[in-house]
Image (cartoon, rainbow over the protein chains, first blue to last red):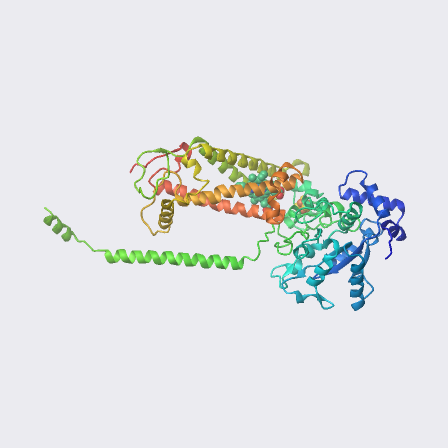
Length: 366
Length: 232
Ligand code: HEM
Ligand code: SF4
């Protein structure tokens, strides 16, 4: 087993020492670590051997991999594949078939208890046969791989929350990684696709400090998912001033006003797009004129339309409404029936009294 | 003492009773004003007003709407806290919106009669000097628990805005994982508004209705405190 350090791999990849130190500083800054941490990261990466990474893909679209491999020249994102020894990855590996599975088993055995497991895609827990690799169900493969992993990273919204395969009506019974892996340190990095810089920073943190960065209750690194897009959006001043674009081609849109009324989900979306941006810091959806879709949110696919400002993911209302209507009709019918019975009884007990009767009564009384 | 008269005494209270003490009345109106303000500003947060014209630097309308929302939110929370204190030291009626006497058989009878009355299954209106059983259920569920729900979800969202480690995050941050994530808290907060507003409509209808067809005063009692029999 080669013991190449992260630094050596980066230099071999053509990175200058200056660029390396800058990248370490950028990683420290993006994780909001105290000053001087950039140096600590650099020192750790110089010494630490590249960790073995097993990357498993389940019910996914390969968009996560596409996004990570599209990172350009020396940006923080591009460090990802220098930082790890990627021992198994469906899309990127050269080996195929039985040889690939053999390589995976070998790498897992050689680094048992030390390798990092990255999983993208959700698991068809409801019907494990819906997605298999080499005859092994996704569920069994994840359980086997997680058993020997030092930590597990759930990449992308599908692995984090179920994503598109898990959207209503969820035909495969898709479940996120967190429902299968319960006894390993787990980071979720949601996003469709997730931001490459986030996984790089998470890995760097892990290599430097030997533990995962601070996570929120959903397992997301706080440094990147601690604030909404809205709280970091450069169009926010227009929001606060009540200046909204009403259509994609009106004056407001041209002037770069807030996109809330065009369905921007920034106010309820936790991610770092507004700060890290995409494609080497070039832009992000809102900067290119389209509202945030909220792709890193648990209810992304079921959250209503992309162009409606308020997303209300309360699940399908039809069954609830039908049951409520049926219950209402039943109660109404029962009450009406009770009323009618009472009225009939009253009518039956009713004796008409004429004036004659009354007079007769009066005559009788004295 | 203005105890809830049970169904066992269908005779209307012939004496005026001092039902709603001053702090209860104060809370009622502060609460009403807060809910009105919070619903109006909250609706505008979810559905902003049409874009204003002129320079961006001339305006701060969304910022102000949010400021008013948060201020009214603080006021709502403080007034509810004061109201809870008063329930401990006030009269019997002041406690009625915080518990249901489910251990009392007569209370259940009263509840049944009241439901029957509203469903036109019964002609005699039940009489109460404080809250009638059904009103008590609605009050507890929608007003007390409803406003508590809005306060907890509201301050949880507020904590998300203030950031990790802020006082609101430390005090109310635990609410967020209960719902899953902050977006769901936001949606439940919004849904809560509609539920509260439904209650407000029913509440006002019932109060006015009771004032017209009931045997004791209703509207004037929440202003002056005295619930008096109406002259016939
Ligand atoms: C009767 C009580 C309340 C009502 C009817 C109400 C209503 C609303 C509504 C409709 C929204 C917009 C939700 C959306 O964007 O989908 C909202 C947002 C919010 N409310 Fe409330 N609210 C109430 C109480 C509170 C309280 C007590 C607080 C605590 C300070 C609070 C804090 C917030 C916050 C922080 C937001 C998010 C603002 C933003 O996203 O810019 N609310 N409220
Ligand atoms: S464009 Fe979206 S994220 Fe930016 S301020 Fe407007 S609503 Fe918020």
